Length: 170
Image 1 (cartoon, rainbow, N blue to C red):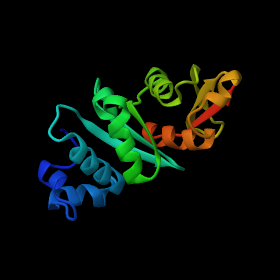
Image 2: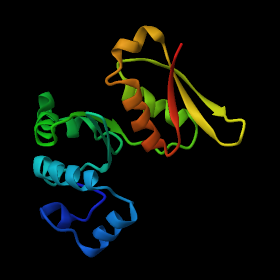
Image 3: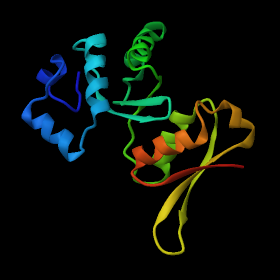
């Protein structure tokens, strides 16, 4: 299993090696990343999958994995996710990690995260004083299909994209 921390740190419970401790201090990885990586390793063992990052907002944790690794992470009948939910005490969504560089990347991220609600489109909004943010357009009829409150989802997408993201209903 590939993870943001080394294999030795995956197998130990309390401490991190100096290199991984430095990543944690510099903010390259979070405590949540370390916790989720270790839990996934305990559940899955040394399988061929990649855990990239975990993001938390409200009562929802989003786990980002490598391309094609979502089924392995969820497990047969959702057994891995159920075990993670018991351990972490929060709801969990698993999506493929996306490097957000333009609106197409953010649309894929939003489509995966907001499912079963449909994403109509993504726009870039330029602020008058400079700077910009993304506006994710969701059909009003899908408001009840969102997997969490819009503000929680906005927070998660903003953390993943590295810039402000707002959800608008049309």
